[in-house]
Image 1 (tube, rainbow, N blue to C red):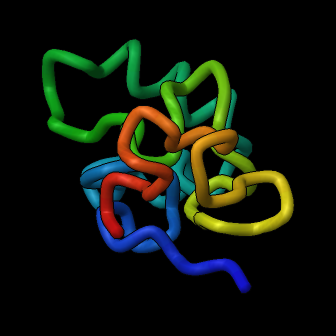
Image 2 (cartoon, rainbow, N blue to C red):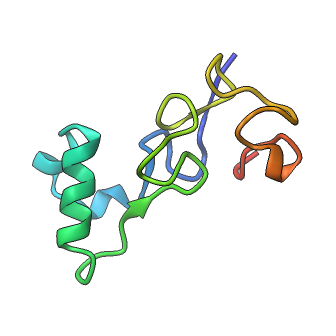
Length: 86
């Protein structure tokens, strides 16, 4: 059973409310491009609990699904097998 990331409320981005709605509803690549272009103006960023913007831990904004398992062999092995927001 997966859980929603509590750091980003399941969006995959921190402070996504600072991104205009017409951008925030686009695909991830377009949001990332907008964030890079406006980095000086806002505090929105990739949720480091969900990934790094180049790769994501399973489904964006979710943890502990089939692609994103808990434990020493999963993507959170560095943190005792638990995601940052656990």
